[in-house]
Figure 1 (cartoon, rainbow, N blue to C red):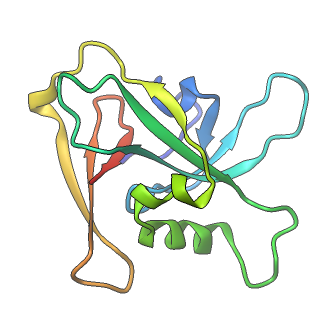
Figure 2: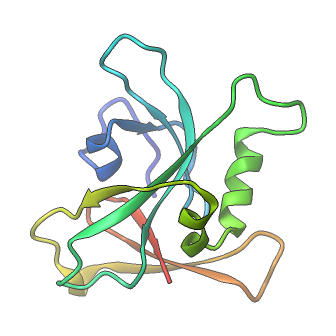
Length: 143
């Protein structure tokens, strides 16, 4: 996955008003919003989720974003929050009270060419997070 640079290509994250500020780890992003109303940007830990693998009938995804508190407690860092998110079951995020933003999938996706990705969850060898990489470069987690 390419890192954010000064000349980014359009992605779903950017269409939602976010830029990637840290490396994507195991399907989990460290992003910052780009407010247009003059307010200060806020950093988030986020992931894109589909309850099933993406097919031609899939119309939208869910985007979950948890604000990184400011100031951070001494024992917390954005990286630590990102690693914690890697261990969460994405199906349970909405049950936790974190509500998603529905995101329309881009049109014209060649579903046969989507790259499946499997990430081993941190500290475990038997739990796998299944993801797919969209042609936009965005990584979507699914069950």
